[in-house]
Length: 289
Image (cartoon, rainbow, N blue to C red; front, side, top):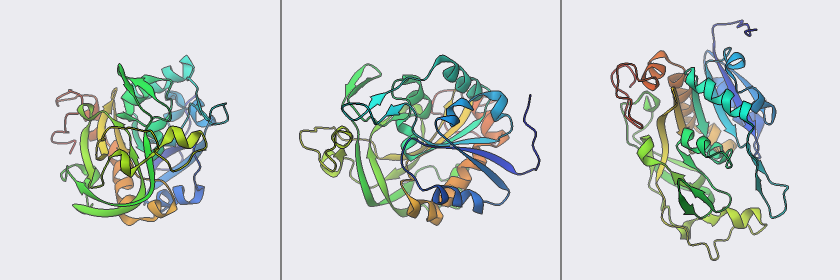
């Protein structure tokens, strides 16, 4: 049975938890967006709702969750695979064109399901893993980094009214970005080298803020992108560690633009390849920009 809609607002489902966060700080931007009605659902319940019949009532999905990781396991963390109905449900949601905005630690979700990282366009690793046939070290993190960010796709709708260059203080990641699969939106001027970050595997093992013996190669400076996730438009923004970030006016502008764009007919048409190049990572053509 379809869920009834009671107003004409743009309706957004926000999936959260799996990582510590401040509820009011996360939801404050959505409360401030005119004509947007956001509903917060936490994991593990959120995963049960990732199916077309439920999400029919919503115009966009925001991922601020980190499912598939058990931090109570011996050794610090254990990857938990999603069941087949959950996988099938999410695929069906994306094939129906439901737009997605993924934020910050969502890039670490479902590490035991490789397709999930492919859908989002990257992967933050808490432990060394093999990704796309390549053995990789765990990812890096660094809190409270003040860095300058440059817009590299100024004509994209997600960049509307965003300064061409701006400064943000937030947690940064030294992680895997599948640059060939995405359209870049934002690049950071921070140094994405091992000396600037701490090992995630050390952290979950109880050794916070160290990179001893961790020889991670230099990483991508890409911190925002758009891509096709099956037949759905998806935006990833690497920002969102805490309340200060969600209070930042540029972050709020980016988030609102992203939500409105992925929910738009133009974005859905672009993701479905209607009249535009369907190659992975292709920039939106007229009507999708």
